[in-house]
Length: 478
Image (cartoon, one colour):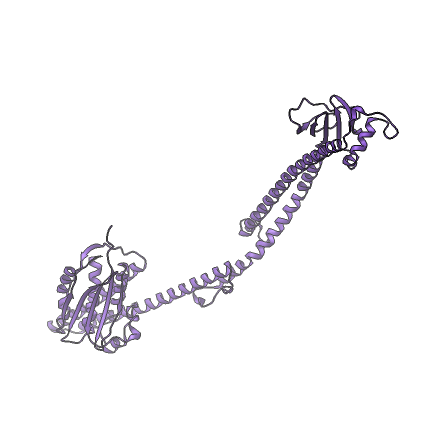
């Protein structure tokens, strides 16, 4: 963890530690502020309440006992007025005589005051209300303000006061404690952050180590930990899925390369053999013409293979752009079928168009022509002689359907999806030794995907094969 300090300070561990420590410290400071504010408010609120209760208690005793200090006369029980008042308010102040200042006056005559006032008389401006609580400053009593509760009751004025410095001392002590524990909490949070980041990111180190071991030669291996149901487990699971997709892509690329090389090698070998044979000795002109015709056919086959490979490569890399335009389908197909009618000439196969509607769709005329050409070419190649190929058009709520049907040996159910894979050739086509490399239908599938549609086999008859193209219907503008 700490073997490379420079890397550590740039690592996620360090950032997590800093964030954790900062958050912990901010929370500790906020908590301290909240506690301080709460104690500050509650202390002064409780002080005001205590002063008020004491003043009210004294007034209540004076009223309840009907004591008239003005008519007081010394006797055996009380020698002076102060003894009388002390007896009256003893229960009120006995537990807090040291810090509480109490003064009772009758009009302007002071009839009682606690000893802690000594010779000081608490005097205030005339107060309009019968009950007031306020701050009062007298340097002889305290270096801070004192909190005063002034209660006026007829002929008596009761004053109960308490120095605020004692509350301030308590709050200062709390502040010192908070300042003292802050660095302790800081150290604890830093240690906790480092341990937490080390523990939580240790699995990342294992993932890094394992990914460094995985190369193109061992993509079957998996990163351990993907089975755990947490963030790291889901991340590892997705990484394993990504590795599997990479392996599938590499396998496909390898297969694609081998098959492409094989398919390109066949016509090139034929070309080479025929040319070498023609060069060995002189031949009649007719023989050279036959060789040139054969070479021409193989050259066209090579060009077709290369064009299909180029299109698939561009499609895979999203380099094919559609030039879609709204097209009435029946006139478009009618013209297209007319131009392709010669494909069935040798096998005496006709191409028929059947349609009850004339829907309009958005399509790229050139790309769609290539798709239809590939499908009809396949239908001719694998269809029975002296039969017809039928192209029919229909509609559903969401799609425009184009069905291309021929009469021939039925495509097996297990091959219906595979025939659209690249370089796949059905067992029937391999046995019949028909020319082709298995790219035509793959190109059709790519073109339909670009148009937002799909292509599939929907054969239901024993002797008929039907390929269905579905194109999305244009959305009507509001």
